[in-house]
Amino acid sequence: MPSLPMQAQPAASLAGRINQGSVLPRVIRTLVVSPHLESRRALLRTLEALSADVIVCSTREQAADVLRKQAVEIVFCDDHLPDGSYVDLIHSENYEHRIPRIAVITRTGEWELYFEAIGKGAFDVLRSPWYATDVEMTVIRALREEQPPLSRAAAA
Image (cartoon, rainbow, N blue to C red; front, side):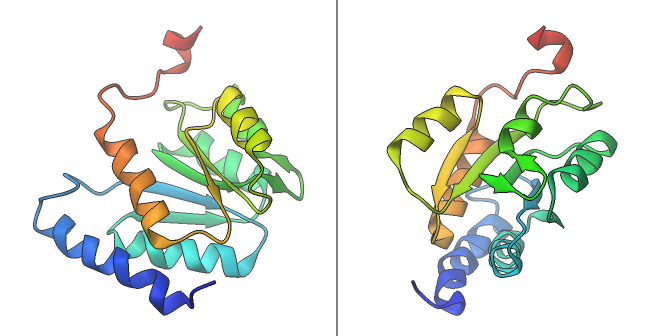
């Protein structure tokens, strides 16, 4: 696995293009949910290099509380949390804002988990150890999608 400074280099180069307005048109609000301190730190650094507004937490309950109170566009969430999983966040009925895009981070890298997560409504699946470019591409895809996620009312 590359060291953290090496992971951040591609994000920093993309951040320069973002600030020039050539890649991403605006700042994106993200939520990082992981019980692993090093995973949270690495994602925070990579997302901040992209000029993202980042909120970090370690449990499903903390994440659900954030999502109830404010709009978040992308959630980077470990597949397993101490008090639940990414599925609990996808299917929660308590969001006042739109349904966020959830990128699942898995340590197994098994195709079955990928297809299962996408089938349950995940936006993307990243295999850990991930590279900064993986996170960048997820953010770019989220911003470039033509249609925003449905609101709860429209999804019903």
